[in-house]
Length: 347
View 1 (cartoon, rainbow, N blue to C red):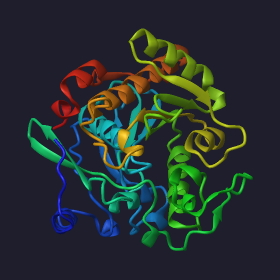
View 2 (cartoon, one colour):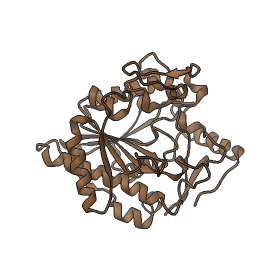
View 3 (tube, rainbow, N blue to C red):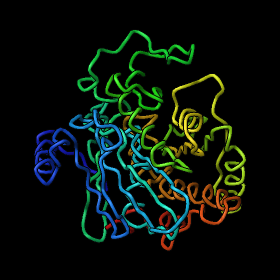
């Protein structure tokens, strides 16, 4: 159930959270309510892969689940856009429930933490309330872009990616999913992108997922976007999902539109890179409920993300040699989440 809360209450909650155990380098960073399963072997900060990110509002936690056995390294990111709540909750659910049998799982539930600090419309909720077995939990509902006050420079009149001729609105310079591979000495958004690239490279990530949402009428809704080098894996996954009753479309990264995660992650690293989109009604209409819309319930969107990740990993495992597979002793079944609600499987 989702409620609206006053700005004063939100600020009190943020202050209490900040006092609850942030490390010194993250003093300006929101510490989200994520309750790791014992399978989480380490909690790191993204700044550990790129130290200049430390102490900024963009630094964010990285949850590492290491089986201790050879296998694939899998990366899952939610919250590239902090108003795309299904991706965030999918990543949180994995932190709280997944147990790898082989390889490693690296998860960032709130990739752009700065975007969590504001909302773009007074009609949108600041928090999403989810009932769980331990009581009601609150998850931050933010914005698409890095907070303007954190960026370090004003928005340009137009944003043009260094490798592209695409002319975008100036605010797109604060869109994390337009600035990859980033710059080590750039804006906060570019430094955040650079840090993600360092993690992918240094950890030798094999399969990487960027979880998103789009307006229900968008062509991107219910879409898997694959870097061209791993389009065959995406095709296998879409066919598998179809057999399970989940209809997903597939398209390759654009050959001319640069700066997007699936394009740059796949081009600049060894990772097979995918972006997954589910339909969030609040992406189209401010008054729509992003959690409890009857046509696009949050539980079904989270289930779709999980099923898509699993289908792609199944495709990876079909061709991966022994010692490079991604397998799990525990993984939340998407059918149960769709039926019972995501809150039933959170701590």
